[in-house]
Length: 542
Ligand code: UN1
Image 1: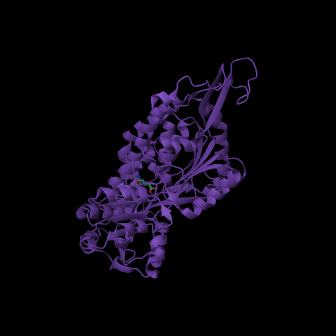
Image 2: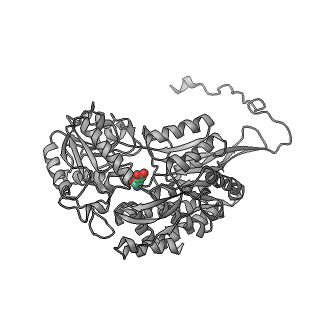
Image 3: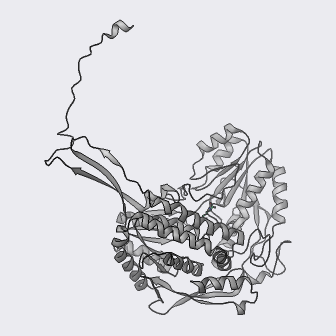
């Protein structure tokens, strides 16, 4: 463990990529560090400093994934039989270890995916919050006792574990999101096969080792590295083979629909947390400066690479000019660079070259839609840098912030998610029109309204179709104990976080205990109570 985290701290003090430590990465199957069965590997690269290769990781084969699933299946009965408060203690230990090593884990997250140090701190804190929340859930995990309709008979309910959960998460919240999934899975007594995101294998390895160091028995969480189309797909294929009891996936809507189909035909439960085109409405009564801050952070924080990032900025026509003037001043001033080496950076690189390429393609779609570009010029390169870009562009994968105006409902860019630093601006005539626009995309993850009219805020809250809504707040920043997830194209109705997520990782078992020593038939042997004739003459009460 120490080794992986020391490399992260060493990195913070070191500016020469050639001197940076490289790690031999492993899968963890049944508690053992293993390589891929055919020896194939892939590397993890720092997107802010492309010469900095963090290490080599196993490109897991189908056989490796099967070995991980088998280990999880073997470990399940004993883990499910472990008292839930004991499972909670181990989860509490994970939270305490994360706190102890927080600085190193944060540095590692920034080194591997390029998020700012502050934002990596938020992601790791979200994992800690999740551990602390579920630590004590082990002492609850309530069932009910229920009265029977028959005498000398008791009814009760228990939460039971589902079995082996396949965990597949994106790399943008590589500490928070897998913990959102695995911690509730574990507290309920499930075991896991976790496919690390291709762009964050080292951080995932560090987290998996912390889980074991916390006292997690071997085989309860099995980590496999590789591609979505490789190891990720092998886990999904195993649903068809009857080996997986639950899939939890965060990623694109297209992949989520494929997983939903496979799980559906096998009657296997799946949690899908998918894309968004999150709207922020700004009404004429809003505090404009506050709303500008919210739009700027929601659109460009994390380089726009959150599933909750702002997509459509919907502005009331009466405040449009003032708002845009203030917003554009901030956008043009944005400090972009490597947050490991510079302070006050708003956003760093794209998560990887792949995310950069997808983003550039999405910009073509936006421009092809007919939107007016107000700012932005694709990839930052020497000779093509915004004023406040800090560093050497070719060191990493950096993008300009982009703002597109004159967007209307009939354009593709109004409806399609752009994962990166770009927002599309739409003008609204009045509240009714703004609410209509906020509901008009195929997604329904997060949403926000800035207004000082309480009735408008109420009507937005009740009229918007979305899993999450901010009132006078940006579209991002959900807390770890509220239900997280979306409707429409953003998910299948499952929720992460808080007590609600427990429903996704357990099933209800209803038990009846017949103490009478005889067969009593429900519904048929129930004592019938005759109504007695009224003894009161109601007419005298008139
Ligand atoms: C994600 O992008 O998948 O609400 C998760 C937020 C964060 C989590 C985002 N707490 O923006």
